[in-house]
Image (cartoon, one colour):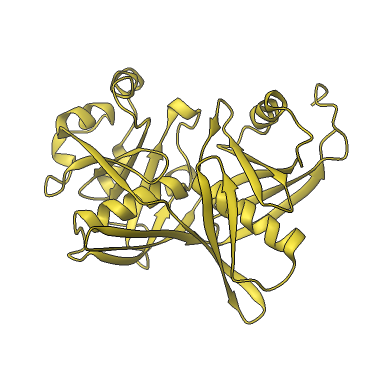
Length: 296
């Protein structure tokens, strides 16, 4: 990275929503402390080339910005969890229950859970979900290169947002999930007309019987052809599952697997509840430090 002349700036590589090292979703966390311009942060994110890179612009205030290789995002799930993990392990260094990260979208509450003295899980609360338009099954079947009968017609396809709008598509089984392949022309036609630029598909059939759902996530618009674990979209999924009573209830506490099809097995924990029209949504999981270094 010869063009980046900011020697001494520390970065970390973290696997988020990972049960083991080199699983989950990779994240670079850069301690910038307002020493980097917007343009330089975008260049570093492109150089890292993970689905997102986060920049802690103030360690003291927990100010965080999130960039994909293409654009800045107001909110994203695995960067929020991974950045909270680095703040906890490298800077806070004590047993605390909660902190709030300051993101472009606003404050996001983070909850730390422990086994004894050791950090075991990190949870983030999502903003109140909003529910938007429905989509015809044949339209999304074409985008996903599937037959219409691969889609579970008991439930509607809907755009949901807890910060980053996502189209939620229920499929019948794991075979349908495996078959999905984005038709880029039809995807581009679709997202040109919608706020949501990403698609999450899910199935009640899983690779690991301990898990409740299998998920895949596609977001070419953001430079992510397929993400191994996405907290923002799974927050949208959690709200969708409660709204549509997918499990026959307005309250869920489930395990979601993702990334199996691309060799990055991930596990996300989802909790959500709806009472009298008010929603609570939280996404949790583990994070593992992989590497620490300095920008040249």
